[in-house]
Image (cartoon, rainbow, N blue to C red; front, side, top):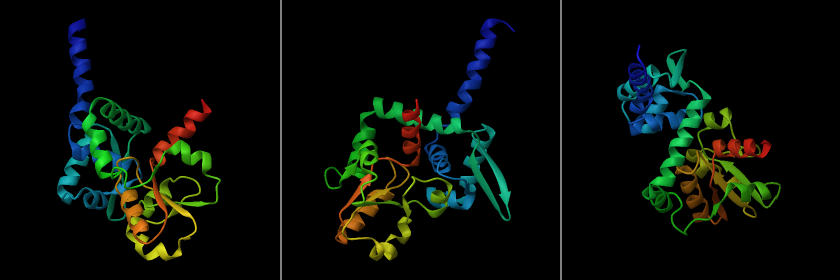
Length: 219
């Protein structure tokens, strides 16, 4: 093989990943799997795709070796094939945020709601996390909380918050977090809490940002 043929072949192999990630739905599937392993049915419900279409996208990710699966009774459970896939997702988001202004404008409008909702940065929360004047709640689905969560957080899935809300202390600020800066669950939780008379804020982070923050502290 001559040098030019080698270059052509190797870069063609690299583009296999790029082609797979050119689909918004496949990126979303990877994002969901970064929170915890999930069944095809759960992923279908989360992405509002048919089971058949979800399976087709997962097969493409499987062929690119970005995901892997196992069988549990009557379900097929998918998960990320390698922690570096999560790093890739972070890199894509980071570059996009830096280079595409519309992303931040969209998030500011839909997730942060302008100045309507109080947002707490991760470092700010870390510096006050021993303060007993607040309670931290994780509003992701229970399975994601069980897989990994911020230490000290209470699991109250968004679809259970309305029933659980009466058990929360009214004399403390309730800080909600979900899957990260682009997850709407925390926004919805804060809006509900405020409508019920609670002092509430959303944490501008999820478990990945929390873990990344801890890693940076050790370096």
